[in-house]
Image (cartoon, rainbow, N blue to C red; front, side, top):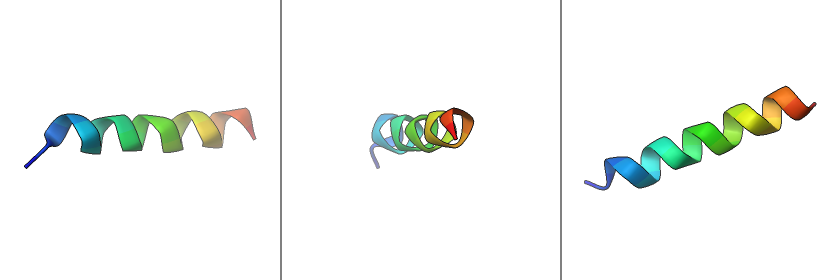
Length: 20
C-alpha cells in the first residue's frame, strides 16, 4: 500500500478545511 499517498491526501484535506 502507498501510505505516502494516503498521508498526502489527508494533509491536503486538512489544509483545505483550515483554509475555509
